[in-house]
Image (cartoon, rainbow, N blue to C red; front, side):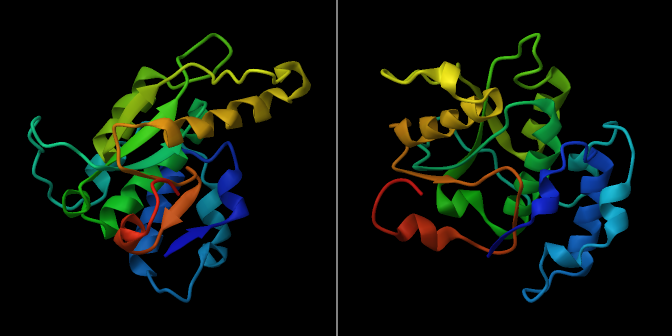
Amino acid sequence: MVGTDRGFNTADVKLNSVLHLAQWYQQNNKTEQGLSQIPKETWALETSMNTDISTCTPRPTETPRQASVAIKNAIATSVWGPDYASMALMLGWTIMQHNDLKSLNAEMVLLTLPWDDMGNGLTVENKTRLQKVGWNIRELDRIQIEGIDFSQIKPHRRNNLNKLQPFGWVEYEKVLYIDADTVVKGKFGELFDMPGGTY
């Protein structure tokens, strides 16, 4: 249902590579094939971030939800900088290809940091593209935990503690967290029927 691959962690993957992967995925959507089968040239493309994935890939038709309808469930991910924005685009696209958010009474929420001069957070361009794919962007400051000496944590690991924040979003009954470098290969609605509140 959900597949990941170490190759997805390459920080310099460009948006066009994601589009190329989307096309490959559509042509080779078989459960027995994993991302290890993706041609090497898919990851070798060196292109710009000038392509809008929302205009190049088909998406299920959605009816805008009314403001009065309370969303019960959240599908959450996190991106701490622009390098992973293309990954979240692919994740959002594959979620929408296989799942009907309206029937799940769910919305996609992407957690990020406020933009700063150190390159943390997302650019305006990143946010616009992610929103077109279906992500609701939520900017929150770094989590603070009493008694933790953050100076002893490597900077790139420090941001990972923020992944704890979605599990405190009390406005949702259930939260499903998926890392941004994940490809969804099927429906996962049954996860929201399991006991408990967060996964």
